[in-house]
Image 1 (cartoon, rainbow, N blue to C red):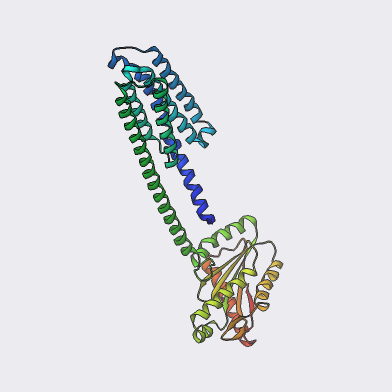
Image 2 (image 1 turned 45 degrees about the vertical axis):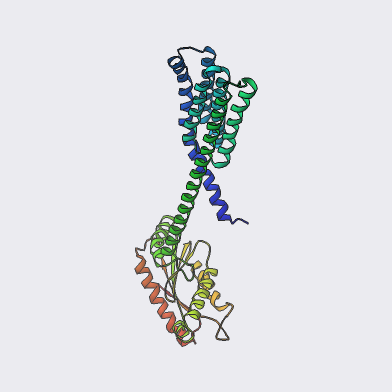
Length: 377
């Protein structure tokens, strides 16, 4: 079963192929418009004869290419360029095959013209393997069938027919191999590009997110803080900055090891994320320090309710197991309220919340290291 990402990449590859085909279809149509009338002048130049029926046939084919050019710029042409390409390919092949059948003694000249048309079109049109196989063999059987039915070769020139049919078949096989090689090359290039894009996204994620907790990191905090302040000034709202420091984290990390410390940090990140609203942001600054940016606060009275949710997240948490015992982590929380007319940088606001957090830690020590919150005015 294909993964959703694989399906998305496949659809994107098909879309790029369609766009590339649409770009290459334009010169194909122009070649068809010019090449067929030009053959009438070559008729007279090479054979010193002028075939009115062939001129009419070529002009009709050129008119068909003009119609394709008009459709090319329509919505249908952009969505179905392969269909237009197939029509152009078959229309050119039928026109040349008709002239081969009707020419009689001059058949070899028009058979070379048919192969020339196919060479020009195949070099311009990036058909995939399946389409090139169907189109190539269709044209081959159109030629063979039209000659055998309408102008059956005689004993004297049957060898010419077999030679021309052989060369046409070889050319069709070469076109199929060419299209296969081009399709495989594009597929590998696309896969490589997708892998590079995935690596870029991963590196960008690593630059702005903490790998352990999945939370935004210090870099993201300094990027988003000015945006939150600008939004608050525009909407005349308040921003609350909370600093959170886990109690006893150093002792846990030193006593039970870094793996246990990592579990505690992840658990703390989950608790903080569960206690905020969708528009708020939890950031891990580093170590056991977290910061929360709370936005869109209309009134000061709302701060107490938001603060209570954060404290309750720690108080009502499901304990984690450390060395066979259930353990509830606690934290010291300091907050500062930033008003629209305050002019505080990220470091200044963080320093105020830091002061409040250290005051909360002193209270927490005195109260048995339970979760405490202190506000800095």
